[in-house]
Image (cartoon, rainbow over all chains, first blue to last red; front, side, top):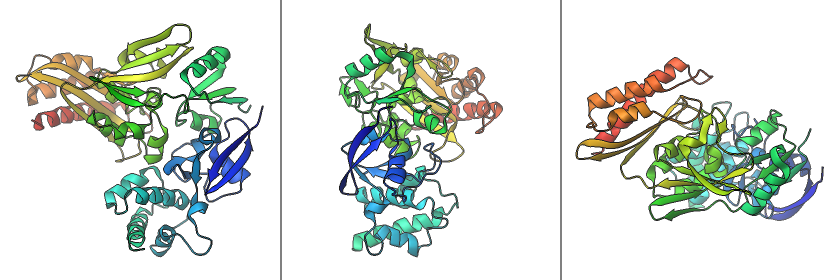
Amino acid sequence: MPSRIVAFNLNGRDVEVMVKPLTTLQTVLREHLHLTATKSGCRQGGCGTCTVLVNGEPMLSCLLPVEDIAGQKVVTLEGITPIEGLHPIQQAFFDNYAIQCGYCSPGVIMVIKALLDRNPNPTRQEIMDAIAGNVCRCTGYEPILRAAEDAARRLQSA
Amino acid sequence: MAVQDYFLPKSLDQALDLLVEHGPSLLVMAGGTIAMPLINDGVSMPEKVMGLRHAGLNTIRRDNGTLVIGATATLTQLGQQDYIPMLQEAVRHIGGWQIRNMGTVGGNLFAPPPAGDLAVALLALDATVTLASKKRGLRTILLQEFFTGFMTTALAPDELVTEVRVPLPRGKTGYVKYARKHANTPAIVTVATHIVTEGNKVVDARLALNAVGPHPIRAQRAEKLLVGLPLNAENISLAAKEAAAECDPSTDAIATDWYRRRMTEVFVRRVLEHLVEQE
């Protein structure tokens, strides 16, 4: 079973990892690099909590062999969190009580980040469409929608 | 046993070579949205896997009257073309944003019902599938002939799907996916149609259904019934009843076969009525 070295850009830094064939990006993030903001949920592509941005596009790290994204840019929740304090989207989630158990939050926040990067002032329906692939097991969708709207306002006035 | 090797060919040629070299021990995937869940769960334990993400098959282009979709073009890419609005509509109803960024047009042909909500739209548009093998080169077959049964296709062991070709529709198109939620959900029934009329009469009809058969199917008796007749309430109702009679639904966690058949009638009727309202 030959292992291979895969190099990619993670949160602005170039990283190299040695992986067995078909190792997923999720496994690399959590088990090789100990970046555990990206959660492991269903590993079926059904829950969205492992969402990361690959070249700015939301993707499910549990279904993505890391070799597929060699040389590409990956951003995880760690990558948007400042050293001090929180990203405006994180702060909006905090202030709007959009985090209950918190398990879906990393994935949802990455999707909201990708949405607001493209569309700084989305409608409620556009937010709902964007997070359709993310399951909140506490069913706290209303506060999540409020937080996303609030985050859009904060980023526009920033 | 863990996967022993993972290949990422950089061209179709390399991919076909690998297929010849490793034969049936090689599991082929593109976006990974079907294969990876099975591998993660241990349901599928392939010895070797080939990923097609970098095989150069991901372009979408218009070639005169045909939309030519590379097999590994993502659903997101397909949603960005605007030559065939029905395909944009179909894409909107598949998975969530992440799945659409990963799942591919070619891969969707292998998604068993109740998944396969793009394939059903392609079926209504008389799409053809181009298959490539090292020994025999390219061949093109109708998508209708590609599906042979539940999770079985006309693809030979040494072949890959390279592109899907869709003639730009001459008539009106309609698509509806009926499910238990609005988004990111398996279908109870999906209906896609393409109807060509001359004067007030139907001259050509395609009525494709998904989630009510072993693979995306055409309701050919209902199609035949419509040809030569005006698309009015009475004929629409007859066609909807015929489609419900000829589909072959099964029961799963989403819905019973009885309910699926009832809803097939309802949604075939609604799709066709909507075409009339567009006039």
